[in-house]
Amino acid sequence: MAPTSSINGGADQVLVEEISSVRTFILNRPKQLNALSHQMISRLLELFHASERDSNVKIIILKGNGRAFCAGGDVTAVVHNVRRGNWKLGADYFREEFTLNYVMATYSKPQVSILNGIVMGGGAGASVHGRFRVATEKSVFAMPETALGLFPDVGASYFYSRLPGFFGEYAGLTGARLDGAEMLACGLATHFVPSERLPLLEQALVKVNTSDPDVISTIISRFSHIPKLKEGSSYHKMKIIDRCFSRRTVEEIISALESEALNKNDDWVSSTIQSLKKASPTSLKISLRSIREGRLQGVGSCLIREYRMVCHVLMGEFSKDFFEGCRALLIDKDRNPKWEPSRLDLIRDDDVDCYFSKIDDEDWEDLKLPPRSNLPPYAIAKL
Ligand SMILES: CC(C)(COP(=O)(O)OP(=O)(O)OC[C@H]1O[C@@H](n2cnc3c(N)ncnc32)[C@H](O)[C@@H]1OP(=O)(O)O)[C@@H](O)C(=O)NCCC(=O)NCCSC(=O)/C=C/c1ccc(O)cc1
Image 1: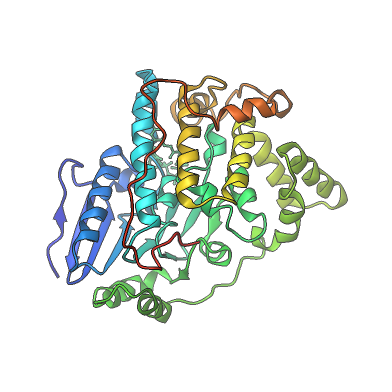
Image 2: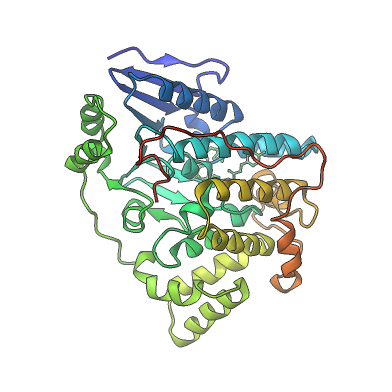
């Protein structure tokens, strides 16, 4: 085994192992649950580009050190930037992060992400776009942004809109946590491997000398099985999810859930309503619109639209909920955000439209994604 080399600049935040044709990148901020710093994103982008150019590299393995794969973007950096009042620093972060998501979604070599723990926000973006996502019994997946005054980004309007039925709308609006079995059932994961078998899986993968996804899938399948969904799983609620989350507006979704609650006492329905009522009303409305638009767009267009949206959120012209969400959940930790506008009916369609418009600032540009050429047919977005 080649020695583990550490990467500077990111102060060892991404470790690299080189074993024959396989490059393993290890997110290495275990104390922060591998939250993605700007440096980590830049480094990953560099490593992905370099590995794509290197014909000796056949597959990429991405994993996390410690109990998380990755708990999202580094939100302590957000707090820092907000205090400095500079939304463009945030925009720079997202520009690079979304570019990384796009490179992963169109990558010419299989990426195998080992999701043995927490996978949230940016962690989902760094894995779901890749070819293989291996969940375990320790996986906890969520896009929790509506509780923070943001919206499911990193291309979630692409991958959530492609989940069965209206499961993506459900998971995106409520921020629901999914376990490994649910991830596999809905397609966020491609395989489920018990964590105790991961060392054997990795030993088998590092012997690979091909980028053929069928070969790699066959290898992972040797270690995987289909786990049973828990009795209380949201995936068993697909009929209710489809009935309610297919509605045109957030208001209609909530009232459909309330009708379900009247008909039948169901804890799952009550807690779903509670999650929606706790979230930022503005976030809910822009998230629903984003996932709906994502249904008809490719991954690149989704990321370009989400970049516009996130810049509007950071500018805070219509609502400053993102800053309030950071205050309530991260700074003061009172978990009691005061959203403004405070109610769904105070947000008009025109207000939602603004989040999808170009930014009125002469220095601002739409996200420009790198050209991707000569890709093999399987190097298209994966869901
Ligand atoms: C449920 C979690 C994943 C685990 O909870 P736990 O097991 O009780 O563990 P802790 O919450 O104690 O977390 C352990 C440590 O990791 C830290 N941490 C845990 N997630 C994080 C984290 N995303 N960041 C930065 N430290 C963290 C957390 O602060 C804590 O640090 P410390 O108090 O110093 O021990 C919990 O940590 C949690 O909810 N984390 C946030 C998850 C989340 O909302 N992720 C998506 C956020 S939205 C986003 O990505 C936007 C990023 C952004 C970036 C740049 C911008 O300019 C603008 C926006």
